[in-house]
Amino acid sequence: MDYEVSATGIANCIHAKSGEEIYRERLPGKVRGGKGGLIYAFPVRADGNL
Image (tube, rainbow, N blue to C red; front, side, top):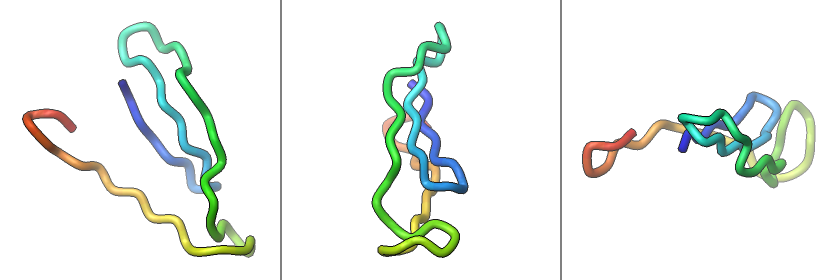
């Protein structure tokens, strides 16, 4: 699976081999003047996975 978050606060999960979109969802939070908290995303490595 490939996980990403856009600069506009959209979270995506895509199947790495097929490219199929598993889900897409707007995260709660402040995005370019919106309401809520700021959104930050960082890659995480655990058990040999990124």
